Image (cartoon, rainbow, N blue to C red):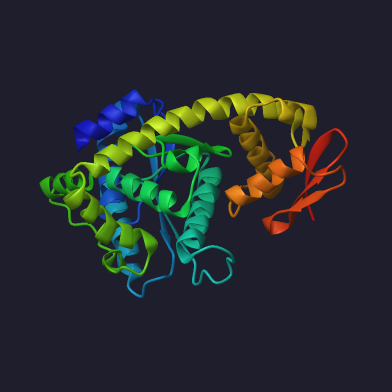
Length: 320
């Protein structure tokens, strides 16, 4: 596992010499393995690590995980910051998983800003990647969604890196066993109450047994290919978008390839809304209809109070 993570870090230029990094550590096998791998490499790369642990308040015994991570931080001599939320009910919209993710990233971003870090390292692995692709495929997704989790991706001012994204869960467990480290285990991962758990416990074993025993590796490889394709297309869209911002000229939209048009629309929505969550393909198709078929003065209403107004020569993206 150590060899794999080192190769991935090197091949994707994930870290710079002397870089300050927030490491998200839940206490589970993946994040603990990531922490130990980075800790073993910090001298050679002069990495300045800072451990971040976030308690979602979803389990009564979650304090056990926090204590484990804090003890590990003390043993390794790495700074540790703890964050907690008592309830996710104040975060409206989306599933519990989505709300938990939002709060966790808010915590990581706030901590990174506070300590002057630009990079946040997370312990997602190859099995997580396969599960994510299947989740998004079943819910419906485009090129960006199916590219799932890239080794490195920019989120606003911060860079999210996943050094273990090509490492299997079995390799991680073997690595920890070899280090004689017993991480924490979240018992809810064995309960099929969450969509991801159903994918992990039921669908993937079925695909492995009935269709292809290497399905997780295949899905992970596919995500990597799609991710590179998306990044190339997105870079082109970004160059175009910088010229126009919230106003997209109709003459540009009508003579541009539909794939780029959809990315431009999403970028305009994200600029107003902050992200594109809750924006579905149905919304995008409605905006396309606004461009090509509806009269000047027509409006498309989107989630979170965002609306798109068709002017004589452009689309205007605004928020109430």
